[in-house]
Amino acid sequence: MNPSLRAFATLGLLLGSILSLSAQREPEVLVVGETFDRPLSETRPTPGHPIYYYLIGGAQLDLGGKIRGEQMPLKSDLENLIHQTLASQGFRRAEKEGPEPELIVSFAYGTVAVDLNEWDEAEIDLTVEDAVDTSEYLKTNEYANGGEIRHLVGASRMFNRRMDYKTAQLFKIALQNDRLYITVSAMSAEALRRQERDIVWRTRISIELDRNSLPKFMNVMLASAAPFLGAETDVPVFLGERDRRNTDVQIGELEVVEPESP
Image (cartoon, rainbow, N blue to C red; front, side, top):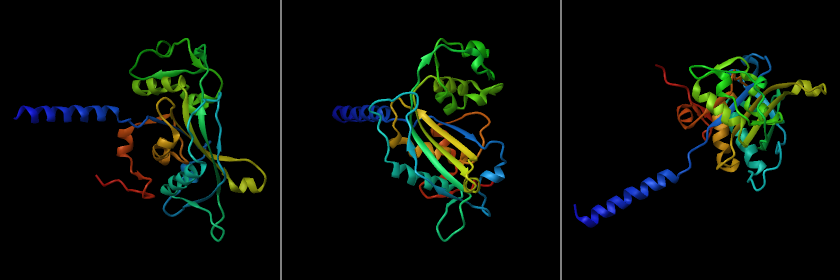
């Protein structure tokens, strides 16, 4: 090969490698779903039983202290994306001329700032399958104080539960780092008509704050969490790029793609 062409080809390969390395990877999305002891048949739509809802205004809530300069999405953009995500799962918007809503859905979003304090081993008992002993694995001098981060990442669900080594590592990191979050909650419309508050389900979705932003990744967060809207997660679920490639939820087209028969 001509030396000039070889040098040009080498430069092209180097530039390609640099661009590939500089491209930001999608974050691990942490999803925690709660249905408060309700069966899935009551909280998730089926082809023969769509669940109608009315979406009320969301709110930006920065928990655990303000993080300065963090960019937030337009509330209207996030609201539209939540409608799309709910529609992809069989939830239907209640219209004036249509069926009355079964659910009143609300959402919140923002940052959760971690304050580091001393670790209390009695606070949470994680059993790590095929890993080192729990007490040694999670022993640290720093832990997020206050309840916000623990609620967000589903720490209360980890009592006497088992998890693989990778999940345990991700969970530990989630406890100790600032995060961006979206929470989608559904209340019983019938209960609200009686002036009672009855939460039917709640789904918490979060990513690490470092090098990420909600405007950039809110679509990734909601696409990851779509199958868990109205569903219970026994333990917190971490979803990466490979998991999303394998998912059968297509938010853009507002449809659920049925998996192929084996």
